[in-house]
Image (tube, protein in one colour):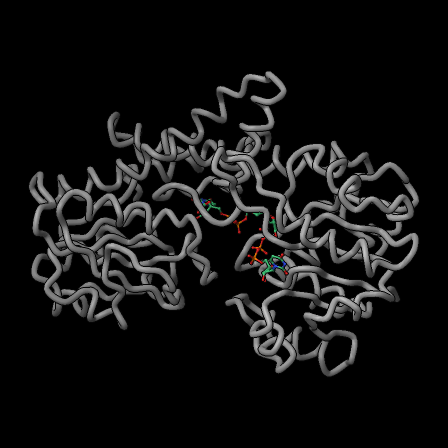
Amino acid sequence: MANIGVIGTGYVGLTTSVCFSKIGHKVVGFDIDKEKIHRLNSGKSIIFEEGLEDLLQEGLNSNNLFFTDDALKLKDCDFYFLCVPTPQDKDGSADLSYIFNACVILRKVAKKNASIVTKSTVPVNAWREISNYLNRSDLVIVSNPEFLREGTAINDFFNPDRIVVGSSEKLKSIEVLELYKNKVASFVITDNTSAELIKYASNSFLAMKLSFVNDITSLCEKVGANSKDVLLGFGQDKRIGDKFIKPGPGWGGSCFPKDVKALLRVSEKNSQSMELLVATVSSNEKTFARVVDKLEILLGGSLVDKKIAGLGLSFKAGTDDYRDSPAIAIIDRIVGRGAQVSAFDPVVEIKEKFNFSKSLNLIEALQDSDAIVILTEWNEFSSLDPNFVAKFVRQKIILDARNILDKDTWERSGFKFESLGNWA
Ligand code: UDX
Ligand code: UDX
């Protein structure tokens, strides 16, 4: 049983905290956000994540877990997991200022010979900057990138495809690996730089795979092929794999967009061409535009003064996270072509001002709409009854940009129906 400090208790930090306390470690979650600390210590999750609140309460009740904004409470930890934000900087590189804020704290309170574990996605060779900034030769940096997916984060923590640890001291890497007490998962023990690059390479390849899938799906429409069958045959090749090949309105979220851009910046700085990644980003932009083009064609060639019901705001189902959401990128483009959008999402609570109206419920979004566009693959949308929907809309037109609906069912109810890639 180890004493673990987690700095930054957002999506990654909170998941990491509750899961390590579940394993039996003593965990102190540190965050600068007092309100968040208060909510967490009262057993309330601050994010929508399957199973997380139960594990949170279990951890609090077992006295294995508590949250604080008092850095001195971190002084007895042997491991400090950095889970603070590494957002995009103006030029697309990763901004390390929050990491350095955390280093200022750890320089003062970190226990002698402790390990500083980077879990936040940091640029390649950032570990050197972090080590210099800490300026404590007794503290070793262990790079341990996370591969958690929002919506399945708890499962991904306990059943990872692999655990990656990298540092200049192999023993320190092994100590971090052993914290997971995972006898079955594959693992990679390497150096810091390689561990950092594994994260970027993985996320960027997955984004590239999706851009390719979305382009092939669009080609299906042009050549008259059925994308469902095409991708089935494509994914059955074990070298390609049947995971991560679901066509959609484009990829987004709090990781892919910023990680792809950050890898592009690192490559540029090291004079390494990355045309594939440049194309991955531009292809994704084109996927957003293609969804809007399809809607415009469905509505006779113009979106001006049309009322559109946008179903879904989160970047994917299963999370309340709408950071860099494809849904919001597409709604923005629909409004840009002169339409009004009423958007509904079962869990997202919008904090900022956007150019669309957020509906309180599904009916409000559907009311008098000229067309519906499905943007997030929530179950409640895939089980929609077209006859129920028909009661509220002005025109029976629907674009399923997540391929979750049954074409025949909607057409039988008189809807003009479109999906992606003749999916059927
Ligand atoms: C973060 C990183 O942004 C991402 O790059 C990495 O891959 C995973 O960790 P996430 O957990 O989604 O992602 O971030 P977020 O949900 O924003 O949580 C970060 C937390 O750090 C917030 O609770 C914030 O209050 C806290 N924080 C921020 C600090 O405690 N100190 C700071 O200086 C800044
Ligand atoms: C991602 C990585 O998967 C995870 O390993 C890493 O730790 C953080 O970033 P996440 O951001 O939660 O996780 O989202 P993910 O499930 O990967 O989806 C990313 C985007 O791709 C979403 O917009 C999603 O809708 C889209 N997607 C995903 C598809 O369009 N089709 C698919 O088959 C899978």
